[in-house]
Image: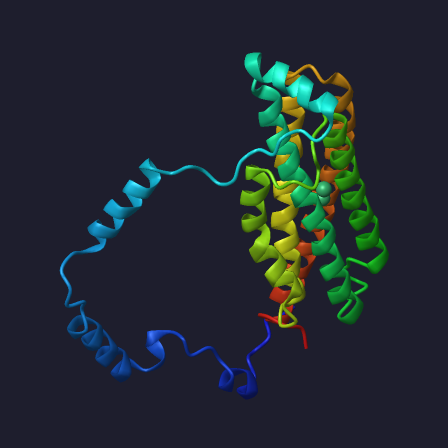
Length: 254
Ligand SMILES: [Fe+2]
Ligand SMILES: [Fe+2]
């Protein structure tokens, strides 16, 4: 199929952020930036020095919550003396719990998007997305039960959960922005599924190191589902990109 030629209407609405849109104003802008240099002393090296000082004095993002059950407290107190590794595991379990919960919300947002602008030939369908969304919810429940069985509180935010919540914030913003196109939404979900895959592999490695063979089996099942999620989302994104390329489409669908 021959590539589409841009219509006058599309050209009129074109992005004007680049300096090349107006060479005369562009030259003046460069001149203004040169003349408008900061008058205070110092440079970006000073900023770097301050950052270095903060890093050297950092106390970290958050802290691990105490165990909730008495049994958990006693066990943890005894274990703490000889082994901190279960706490490292709990921190990462908390991280996956936070991400899987966000995953459900990401798919809820994509479901809303697809219910308005679905494309049956390209996918995904509402039914396909519901299947993945429900699996993300089951992953969340698996993690909640695992954390509870270790005597910890699944509602507490661990340091790694705090960090991953910030990481995933941009994905949620794209998927809930009504201006987002299908390809932009699918790309955001693709990033989430890539992180999902890595996250479960990390948990499997940690569970195996601690000798939790029962958990390794359950986590491997969740990971197998994540592999399918990634394959499917990659397929939908790729099909959408090919359609966008053929239609000469950038941004929202006509
Ligand atoms: Fe997941
Ligand atoms: Fe997933």
